[in-house]
Length: 65
Image (cartoon, rainbow, N blue to C red):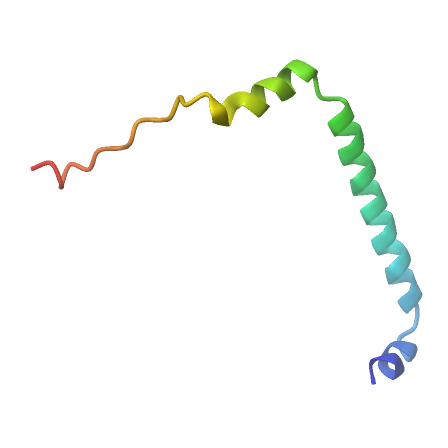
């Protein structure tokens, strides 16, 4: 059923090409960005969850009365 519908749409092959180009472009940009990160920044971000410096909990004024 889908095959018959898609065969009747003119230029349907172009959508596949455009989607592959968008994916490849996005993947390439993210790859360049990832390799461009500084090692010091990556180490800092990697150890951040393990340091234990948690933010203090917000107090609720209604519960403390």
